[in-house]
Image 1 (cartoon, one colour):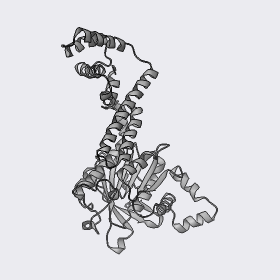
Image 2: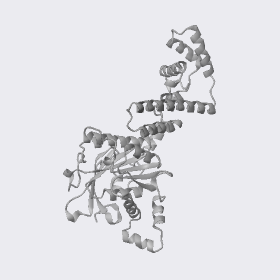
Image 3: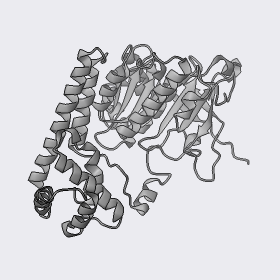
Length: 411
């Protein structure tokens, strides 16, 4: 930890309660030294000793000699094997301390779900064993600029959305809302069947289903991927072709899109599912029904906490998140419902998302084949483009597709 980068990478993972006072004192002084010497990448112990003496003027001669012996040993770097062993020991010390604490709290009746607490501690241990997180972010500005280019990431099937939004990147979180039976499932099937093949190898689309049986969604996915009606799929199968093979050609892998029924599950169980499926894109359908925030005094506050939780998971697991929601009754029959027309929320859900996509529909039966997409919130707006496209699109439930309306060119 005498190296600046290593110090700030692991300082919060040091189990201070399990270490001796001398070690804790030295590590604290390392931090003070780095603050005083912002250009220093590695602490030279010769330079460190005067600072150490100034920070501890009341140390006895005997104590100072003890510290001097430790500091002398710090001059030499440890090899990778020793370093790995020390890191593992620190993490195990912290693991033991945290487990003992949670068991003590459980004995006192302060832990309602002991399994969840222990699993959370174990998960933290597993993540930290690889030391992936940093206390501050170091970047190469040019690389960061390239990584945020509007054409890096996942594109939508619908060009009207691509024209208004940059491509989706890990950590982006959006809400897709519509009135009941107006095409939310069709929209998602249409889009994720197009997005799946764009994910890097080993990452998957995870569709967390809270509406009906998940088995029926698979047929919609195959329809959307192939652009075929049910009768056309039967004809293709009867001709001797494999629907599974045709579907795999488009999405990249037969199980690239994974549907999991989560009826009645809580946030703890849902996070376990996300973590175990190498998730690149997650669809929360319907997120409002996930248990875990029902003790909040007001419905809107509980939902706000729920959507904040979902957004944080996107950052934690480096994935794109999209949650379906319902448009309230005041948006019924409107082509372009407004920002505040989400069910049970005027601002809470909206504040937790990067974009809010509203699927509007007219009650005019002559317009049943059209849907209207609006982006009343769009933090992913393309430079120089309208943030809210307000575009009509073709709604084709017979093939589980939303398609762009062709632009009519003047003769």
